[in-house]
Length: 267
Length: 358
Image (cartoon, rainbow over all chains, first blue to last red; front, top):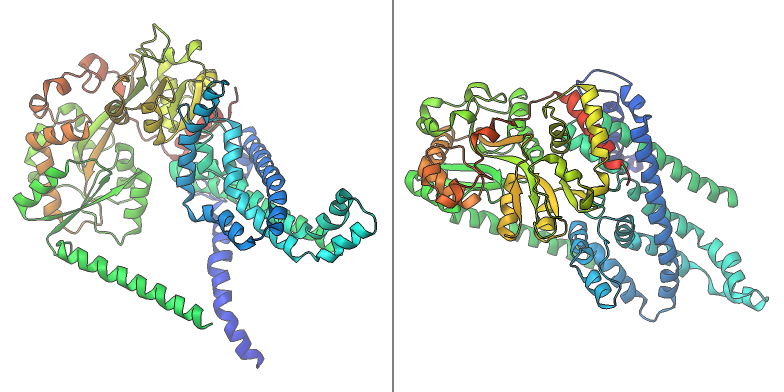
């Protein structure tokens, strides 16, 4: 195929990227240099580095870290068990199925389940522990977030485990490695790409969660996502909202870069 | 490849079928004629029987569409492509919409029933001379509480009762910066439109001592949660309070004596209107005392129509929680438009309050 016509076929993709990837990011960056009254300023960035927003950044990262950690701890064994089951596709479907239900509906369901008169508290009452406050706690926030993100962690890990050549595991065992050593030295390093992909797919959206912070955590957990939502919808301070978004984009790029860098170095 | 094409074709056929069905249904219900009036209102915020009565009286077909926040409504009108003839924004939104040229002026000659509205609710700061809006419903901000769950002796007739140490972890607040900072200011005896930085910082410090009592700060879910007895008390708008008490009649509502906010939902004609005459007819129809009374009975909010109040059942019109006596209404304030910069500051203070840990 001549070069010119090949370039021609690239045009729709380039247009797509320019319109829906590059332009929005550029617009957000541009917006972040304006204050509420629409005059050019660097104030928003100065405001970002005040205790209010820095503490918010810290708590966003902390909760995103917790969510990613627990997702990984649950997803890795789950993915490993999946590769060992008979009807892999069926089980995989069952794991993906909840993502077909609207996020908001799932979160509302938890309001009922975790409530003072909800199913969990009925059970706790029945076994004699008594009613506990579950809703509007850090625990319920992390739990619901992990529940929502877990399919995105399982899938890449499952794919990585599927691609792993089983003869490598047999070889390790034949050469006298214990099950733990085999996992630590053979299986885990070879599935590290899947783990990284999963962590990225969970950590990055978890950083900017906002709906769940209000519904399940009762605004006791404040993340940067909450602040962006407020600035765009309530205060109409689009400049400050954009500044936080720019900051999040920079952090995400850094995370992707760091994850990619190590991979390149290990080869 | 073949099956891929086939499934794409199936989706396309299904989508076109839906589109055809929708237009067919619209024409069969008379939604395509020229004599229509599109009303853009909050969900379940008008008695449907009144809409039918209006259609019969005037022959205008009413299309009723709903929004769930002032911001969403403004964005839709701003973007255009819609033909809303009448909308019902809250008072602070009217101020903004007027500044952004989203409203058309009213022709008061076509609204003779405006004389039935109580003077207290006319000519207010957000729309001097009622050039753009007529009041639809009004209400307050106060405390809904469950007498069974609240410690004895607490009546919430003072905002300070919220700070009672026995209320640990059993309060819910509505997720609004103006509302929460507002009652904080009121509890200290300041105006809820105060912009004095020292007063605001004092309010923030006082609000932060409320944190141990706060179970959650939530949005619309507060109605469901309070009716479900998830908390002992909550700071809410009176409209929400009416709905909560409708669902669970154990609960009670009170407006603390230090003062509070009074809010309005108003009828306006957005720039996108195409049936100006019909819009005025509809407004005048809703301002009629008999219709206003019927609507107030259905919706459960307070009507600003002074001639409608005698037509209401005694138990509604004498309910001081929703029609407070004059000495209390004099202490109620409308939110002034503080300007974007101050509003942003209020929000940052509110964020700081929310982030304060126990």
